[in-house]
Length: 364
Ligand SMILES: Nc1ncnc2c1ncn2[C@@H]1O[C@H](COP(=O)(O)OP(=O)(O)O)[C@@H](O)[C@H]1O
Ligand SMILES: [Mg+2]
Image (cartoon, rainbow, N blue to C red; front, side, top):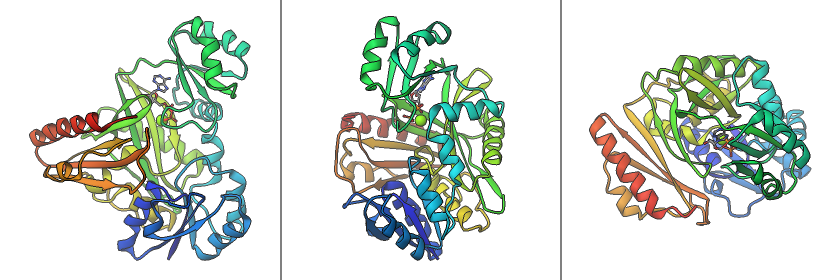
């Protein structure tokens, strides 16, 4: 069976690596000439709007998926005429715009941060008495890893913030004074079988995920599963999905969902019976999903901008290194390392070692 993927970055690469033992073949469409998934499948180099390449992708693939959420929806519709594409276009349509997304989440009865449309500086100023400070101004579209976001501390920040996002249509959100940030990842197959991973506890710096730790019997697990179940059902979802959440006391506030495999689930490669990548493939092929049981304590550290010396990382026992084979660039995710161990003590030591190594190499 051949899986087509829009995008050939590290998520596509990890999907392909997960699919190889199942005998799957992969074909990617990505405009970047040197893409890190290219050595684990066939790479069609060209624009996502290139009809000839899209037709070739649909011809050669049995099912198509994507690794990023900014795929234009009309491309999905075009491909779908020939070959099934999962997750469904509805997930993209809603998730690509922060206001549509938050309105959808609230419509499902899920709590979100207070938010208001900010399509002009005047509208932003008018929203602030209700939203209050601190707040965050975010572009409605195309933001990721904290890009297109500015923190607002007082009315004096508004004009500069508006300039910083370059007049893009935006949303202003009240800052959620969270105790923890978590995410839940789940997979749902074409037939509707569902599997949930243990929630991941996430640390971000400058809007970029740094450390993700799997949890065991997290007090918010059941509530997080209810949230993501509600979303998957409403979207008639197929594939792996991630929901980012803020924990405030006993309450979960939904931040955003990603209709794809997610950085906070990379620890599932070694830390779970079946990884988020394999379950995504099983889901889109309508195969039975694999067990999401944990195999001990697991965590993932991202390496951004720079990667510590390979020898140092490989000298740590029960640490698994994933190099994405990407050129180093400031702020770019280049690699991650996963810890997986049965010993809580060793786990805690390894977290310290990895965060220390990451701190010294980080240039984001
Ligand atoms: N309303 C908010 N209150 C508190 N922190 C926030 C809020 N919105 C975003 N953040 C912080 O910024 C990070 C990135 O924001 P997010 O909305 O997830 O955008 P992105 O698409 O860049 O991931 C979040 O993980 C969180 O740490
Ligand atoms: Mg996010």
